[in-house]
Length: 536
Image 1 (cartoon, rainbow, N blue to C red):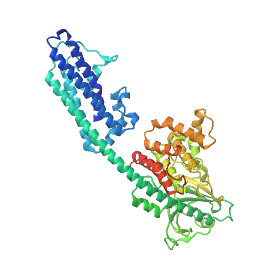
Image 2 (cartoon, rainbow, N blue to C red; image 1 turned 120 degrees about the vertical axis):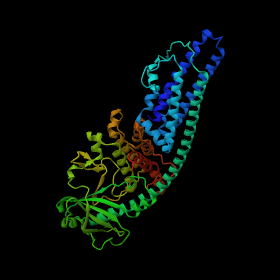
Image 3 (tube, one colour; image 1 turned 90 degrees about the horizontal axis):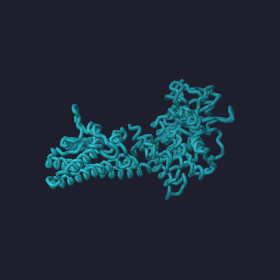
Image 4 (spheres, one colour; image 1 turned 135 degrees about the vertical axis):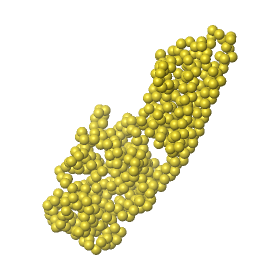
């Protein structure tokens, strides 16, 4: 049995012990003259045990407050402490809160000693019911001596078999256990405060680095759009479609070296759609090279994508390997390929996130899938804001994936957006608040597996037709559900978006301080959630 379960047993058994000692005091009344001194000592003993019950509860509250969300840690609001302490998430939270294996073993040992001490006290109390046979434990005593209403019922104790000195020694042992538990709670609180401060400093530094990386990705994505636009020929079709797969580039918190590698040598994955090639689509893996020429002499410049794709499609299940040079030119190697992502998929099967959330399939979305999808969409907004890839709002209708025919599921780890070529004129939209509100609502929809419109309809509210009415409804939805979420960092990221909590900087995607704050308040919490829920 874990220490936290034993704590539940001890806290449940202490009222029984205290009540049993008080019943001894009542039994002394007929002979109070003879045993007056013993009665005073007994009263002091009861008071001391009540004090130890208070301090045990306080110590556990301190530990629980550090280990789990604050609304869960107030034991005064718990009706059944034993059941509460046996919840898997409570035990898991305490185990992960304690700094190491030795601390956990020490915690368990303290509570075990406290349990054994209460059992020793119980053996001195002959007027309570004891198991006739079998294990003599606290849980059995609690079950054999239930409350009748607000109090316990015992037979009057005229047989004073209690050894006063032994009882006092046992209460001292309970006090020692509480002192040790108090010191452990203080020590762990101090350790976790230091860890939190270190993590916050690290998070701020990582957010700054991540914002820098994302801005470089934004520059590369802009150059890629320009290069693809130059390569599509309008001779065969008036319009061509290109899919850009989304990459969070932040799926797990990384060190600075790994981030720099993603900054200077990013890879983009495209799906190029053209009917004139005779193939629904062909994929390309594009590496950004800081050169005027391709990384390999075997790669040839792509002048006409339609012609290039029609000449030599890669083998089934394969994708082209391409380079994007600093001159915004594409080069392709006809002899080298890599594995494709969309092998065997049909363009007809494309599904938007909105369609998915409106269907019954949304119920199949697992928490870890929700978190990775949320991290991908949030990171991609920072990487692609105001580019031609994101011409309209960051919407669930423009975020797409393809169902897996064999598994009857949708692979949301491979999401993409779609751009038409030639593209409309350059976007002049700079609606930062709207972008982040839309993102916050999408994150809400992903976790709740329900569309915003569906929720608004369920509360009989009128549809939101402007920013502030939409914001008000989004905040209302978040407030109504976030207490049930086991991922407080996720809720913080959503709240930052829907409440637009980005004070102190210019609200402009082009401002480095603003991008850094978005990474700090949205991306970093989602990273932390992914690290907890989906450990490496």
